[in-house]
Image (cartoon, rainbow, N blue to C red):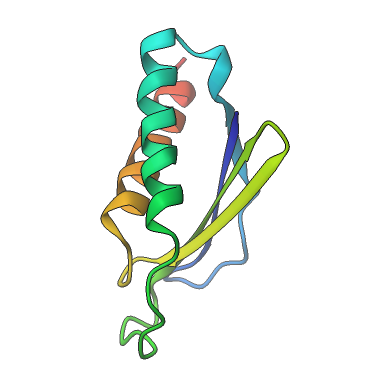
Length: 103
């Protein structure tokens, strides 16, 4: 399983940053199980309902792409309109990438 994250927007405005990715199956078994659980919850939740444009014009948009055994699912949400499941995956990814930078 490969999961990638891309950010776009925010203040000051910026173009999309290079996506970051993690090869989940190369992580410790306990972590793999946890991340697969997050992915399953995200897949089950789907995309949030379409709402009115956000008042947060400087909100960041996040794209999470899950590639797993030939299945590719893409999720895109914004700061102001994010599901719990998307937020959980986003937090795990950001923590993982922050720890990787420290190494």
